[in-house]
Length: 74
Image 1 (cartoon, rainbow, N blue to C red):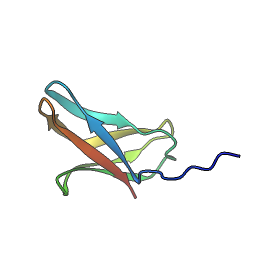
Image 2: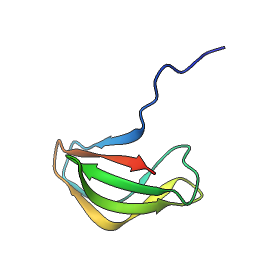
Image 3: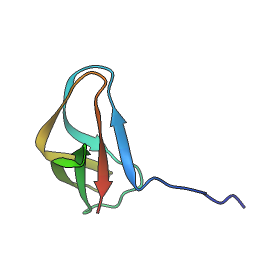
C-alpha cells in the first residue's frame, strides 16, 4: 500500500509568456467549490468549479512572462 506523504493545499500555475487567463482546470475538485486565485497573498480572481473541474473566473487574470499564481479551493 502506498501512502501519500504530503499534498499541496493549492494549485500552482506558472507561464513562460505573457497571457490573459479567464479559466483554469483543477483536477479532482468537485463541482460547486469556490476557487480563488492569489498573487502575493492578494486575491486577484474568484470562480466556482463546474462538474468537469473547470473554474471560469469572474475577472480575467493578466499574467506576465515568468509570472504565476496559485488557486486555493475553499
